[in-house]
Image 1 (tube, helix red, strand yellow):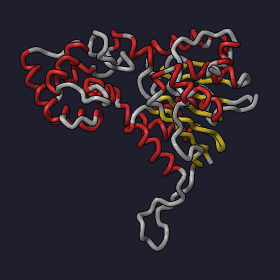
Image 2 (cartoon, rainbow, N blue to C red):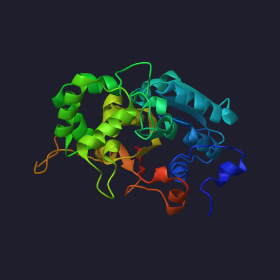
Image 3 (cartoon, helix red, strand yellow):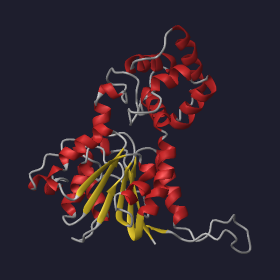
Image 4 (cartoon, rainbow, N blue to C red):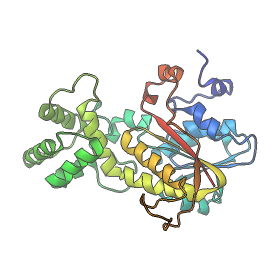
Length: 322
């Protein structure tokens, strides 16, 4: 197999957890040796940033994450690029403000890799996965916010039903919310395994070929706890503001809710007019802000899928600021 990671192996670097769609990211964010300014708004474990640092040896990188543990891991991984990499603790929804404060406004490229990272999923103490036992936390930034356990034990039935329906796309959202409220009167939710067992008991076995029902419930709670869709909408706008004219934005998402937001944002940014159909003249005053670079969504190639199964749901879209 022609390794996806040949360049990294040749450099003698051990990247551990593999980032998704690395070739495609480096292809869109390749600045041919120029002293580019690149922003990784969701640095995670640092895998994408490390590859961007290798592909753009004259570039400066600003790496942002709201998970302080992720920033520490990324700093270790990017030690080889010390002197041209900066780290910032914060939300990518504030990307443009963070970039300006660090001298990275007018950036040449921005990357957003949305969602939970492999180390977060694999660490049971974070509570993101139902496959290991840990506290029901799920916060990306553990210094603030409400935990998944507090959400389950405090929110009223209607709000929980909306979370399960909108963010988990569960058909049985009302049934599950009602069961949660009955159960917490007897004993509060505290652990990931007990929630997973509760979901399977209430919702039954998952149909063959479908995502496990606990996965959808955990996804819904994680999105709600971290305001992920709101963060994404604000982050896309902030990323576009942070780019120089001609700069490139690359966004990787992992489920249809995220991808729909990214697709619609780029489509709107690339439009000259957003008036309702049928008006004789344009009255919206819309100015085209971007050019979409991906005519179709980009997904992992077979060789990457064979090497990294977590790349299967990844969806990449890219746009260039006008």
